[in-house]
Amino acid sequence: MSQTPAPDQSPYAPAPDTTTVTANPHDGRTTFRPLRLGLALFIGGALWVGPFYAYNAVLIPARLEQIAPADKVGLIAMIAITGSLVAMFANIIFGALSDLTRSRFGRRAPWMILGSAGASASLFVLLSSESTTVVVFSWMAFQMFLNAIAAPLIATLAERVPKARRGTYSAIYGVGVLIGVFGSQIAASFFTTDPTTGMAIFAVIVLLAGPVVVLISPEKSNLNQPRQSFSVRMIADNFSFPRHGARDYYFALFGKLLVILGAYSLSGYQLYILTDYMGQTLAEAGGTMAMMGIIQLGTALVFGAISGPISDRIGRRKPLVIGSAILIALASLLPFFVVEPWAMLVYALVGGTGLGIFNSVDQALNTEVLPNIDNAAKDLGILNMATTGGQILGPGLTSSIVGITGGYAPVFIVATGIATLSTLLIVPIRSVR
Image 1 (cartoon, helix red, strand yellow):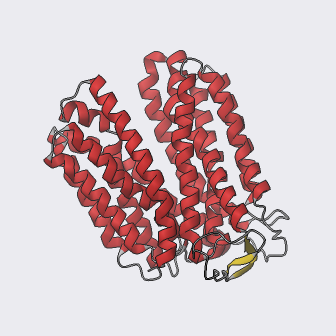
Image 2: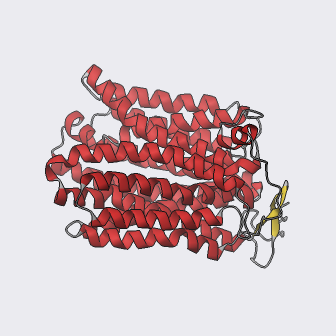
Image 3: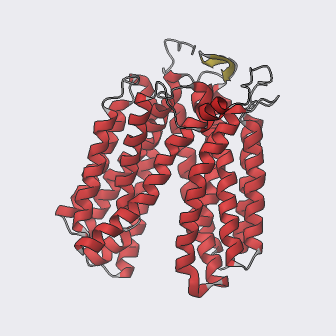
């Protein structure tokens, strides 16, 4: 059970790190050391996600410009699709394997360290090769090992943080991820003419991710935890979708999918919306998108940081998740009525606020609908499939709508409808307020 705060202490402020409390009442092996765990989640989130976005957004395109300029567009699409598919399944598999692991270092630490070493090695192979085939397969290997870091790390929210504080720690993790996303792209932009140097730097950064988390916030040994005997039922329980007591889990899964799908239906097409739909030149659109990026970063950081603690203070997750989906829906609708570039700045402001709140509080909600805490990493990995799936399906949906209708106006209606529909899946969840 979590400790009750002193009268003069905020109910969601971390307690002094001199105290250890049991995070999960069903598992006496896990403990909650507030300052250490918060720091590990913050730094770990930035270190694992930063290299991904640095390579994906800047360094791989710059490297392909050097080794295969004629094929770069098609190669980028192939890398994105194959890497995303690998990531979807790797997250679940490594999550399940870590759930089953018994070691003196706990069940998450060995996989985070293995993932860091494998991800780093994959990036060094990628940066040293001039073969596009090697680049594609190295990126797939990187995505696989990267999820050996991410899946166990996210599971610590469910295992080691009391329910009453998960909003705060979800926000801490989310802010770390945001800093990794945007900070890495800014840093990588200095290496567009020398991408291999930037690649080497970020290959070292990802090598540090798992070990740093383990050193800051080590797990207890779980060698004495009972092991399941190998059987068909054991495989079904640990490597399949939840089958029992999972009603709320699936409402959360599909609600998350629809929010991400609605948001990413527009995000990948902002340049074309500004040029083809709103009539800006490429130079003008570049300036508008830069302003949008600054607005989205600011709102996501501010509202992502405060919404988790607010959720803990009021003891509710659903109203904030529903409200975030409504903000995303409203933001998506505005450009349908106002075909002016300033409408996209308002879209960035309102939509960035919604995404900041959603990314912070939804992760906390996810940890509270898990059917079985012993399968936390695997089941959270399945929930994270909704994020990856929405990011893959969103651009495809937009492309199909534009191809059928010949314009972008219907896309805004569809994106608004999808985000709004997600609220109808969050409302019926019973196990979370």
